[in-house]
Length: 88
Length: 103
Image (cartoon, rainbow over the protein chains, first blue to last red):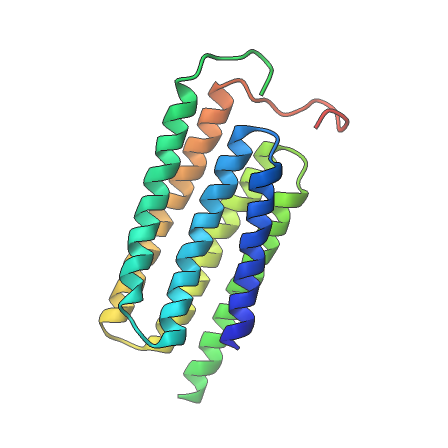
């Protein structure tokens, strides 16, 4: 049962990564990376259950923090670019 | 004990299915703001279901408190990140296409 759920999460991560590669605008890529990070948190939490070690949840919490900080930092970087009219 | 396992498996299964559906939405929707809708809404709910399923499996204790912390943090940061993303995209000049052709 846990194996099937882990496979489903990995498929969802692969699809998010596909959008990160294909994405036409930079915001599509940031969105895909943010979604990928959320799914990584869930996968680490699932690994904590599968291996029976609750310590792994600390890693999941830290990864959730880093994911949010990274997304906001990337967005600050894009907002400081000079604006291009109508061209994403 | 069996009932807890069934509830946990059900919550995890629904959460994983919603994750896959949300990722399909990221790939299938035509332009950026609809993709943002697919990703942002589904991720929050699916992570809630997922962590609830894990909490039911582990039972009360320190681990459940950690899971609750992760859930509260994701509940606050995931919509915030989506809002910041939409605001940054809008203020940098990205608009929805008028017709279906220029997606």
